[in-house]
Image (cartoon, each protein chain N blue to C red):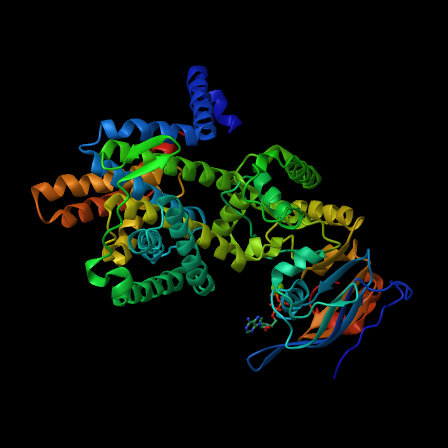
Length: 332
Length: 261
Ligand SMILES: Nc1ncnc2c1ncn2[C@@H]1O[C@H](COP(=O)(O)OP(=O)(O)OP(=O)(O)O)[C@@H](O)[C@H]1O
Ligand SMILES: [Mg+2]
């Protein structure tokens, strides 16, 4: 681009560089910046319960973004890992009185195992077949959970996932207070953000990009592509499962709808809205999507129509999503 | 009938071959693309495989590079039977290939293309350490870019490179796994004569440190640089020898009728 340097005035060039340096700086501190935003955000949200939902679905979309945005594999069955994370955390609490700090990792583990099984079958396929296999398997999960009434509550959902307060040493955290609950969940989300960012920056993060870019070349380089695809799927499932587990604690119940394919469609929309393959996009997507749903459903019961129209507009004119477009415009 | 080529006088019989191809055949449906080819490749050599369009060169190349297994016969690398091993195992063993059609990571930077390729065989599964701190890999990638003359383009996305530059990057990516055997399928495809000449110079330099098997349909290009030339025709080995032998071979002249040999 040296040819341009002669035609562009020096000040514009400096601005260009300044923006570039700023983006580099923001990328380096992206975890802290995201946490900072999420820490002040509930004070601007219409009400705190919505803020908690946005936090949890943002985390879910972040996990989904790993497989879809970063690795380029469209899973249409992520409701399965989100829902199983919720049930995997909720059942031990509701039925066996397991404390929350054990139930939370249990939920992640259940989601991880489910992702390992679903992924083992699905990662052998590509494109539309991958989407179909993940969708079919998530429907199988839905059916099994729906039928296992004694354990899961079936159609009525799982009730009694009550974690009214948590104790950490001498500290008592009252989860019945919405604001306190928000910050308790933010602590977990912050840890997830940090781990997620480390994975993206690691050598494996480079492999994920290579998978999205060119599988044939990655194979020729010596990567066992099927195994790598499986591993990304499991990781993505674990982050999504953590979101599900937090959702169970947040709601005190696990609705069967968590496993419904609508949930898979919702997380896809949030990710697209925010910007696939961007670090902060999924949270922004969850924010916009849930806020729109909330605001519009007050005015009209046909809120899905409005959201659908807006969605088509965005896909046609801003295919990079909100955050993706902002970064694209800024980047020199 | 099966043509059998033994090591010609271009390869001393006392060194064990780096690659042995035994009675290799390949059928696509009812069509026989390769028919009982047996060849030994001596280490350190630059061997070219030529032949008219549809001769079976790419099919042969794909069998050697592990893209698909042969229908019959075996391939041995350094004495070890590698027939039917998955593609990714080939790079790990020390066989690298470049594609006839440019095949890169288009949105990754030139440097990252080579770095991620080098990482495949050098770093185990690592989900934690920052990749920028693995300086050994970065240094290795930088050195390869200098070798193929792309160091000045290192921060560009691969898709921004000109065609000829992409062909060079393709070679650097292939070299990243430190292969002992480098397989190149028409590396000069779509290049200008000047670029093709530079590419041939590069291949000769690469051959100094590793064995090279080069597929090319333009006979003239490989005459000057090859230690040995194999001629494929209708899936069979038609001729095998030094460039001088091949030039003089009446069968080869007949197959390449109308082209100056
Ligand atoms: N996948 C395939 N299915 C069916 N036939 C094939 C397949 N691949 C190659 N062939 C046939 O096998 C024969 C050899 O093809 P191959 O690509 O090996 O030739 P080539 O020597 O590389 O030719 P070119 O110089 O055009 O690249 C051709 O007749 C081709 O049509
Ligand atoms: Mg060919």
